Length: 157
Image (cartoon, rainbow, N blue to C red; front, side, top):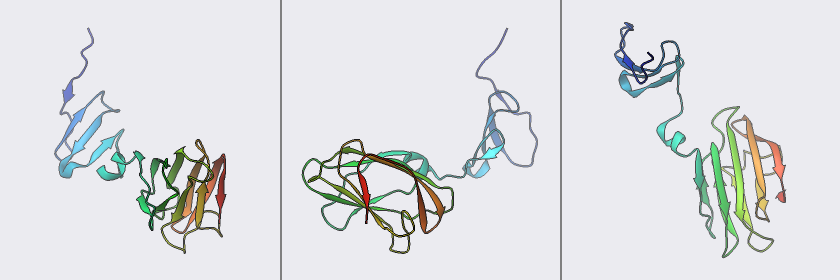
């Protein structure tokens, strides 16, 4: 008979914690609130995990902040809007931007967090002019995004 959902406390490591799951592949909540899966600490913050998929409403002013990780949907049905994408924190950061509503008059412009950070080594602004346009970005450094995929009508300046 197989018993599922068993919690075990069979580890003595000097760190108090809660383990659940099959030994060797359990999920561990250690003292201090750190979460481990398969023995590896999850290093993202709760805020970053919660922002994995976020719809962001743009601003017609200087721009609305967009997190530098996860997936964000952007767009507008009323006016051209602006966003500011936080600069990457480290090489390897991943970000996807998807335009859910837009046109050549209802554009969504995403600027990097600073002029020192670029999308392609030169340009700091990406403009989405159609519904369904998207960018898949990978950080090469804290000042440079790599455009892994440009799907649709995203232009750079």
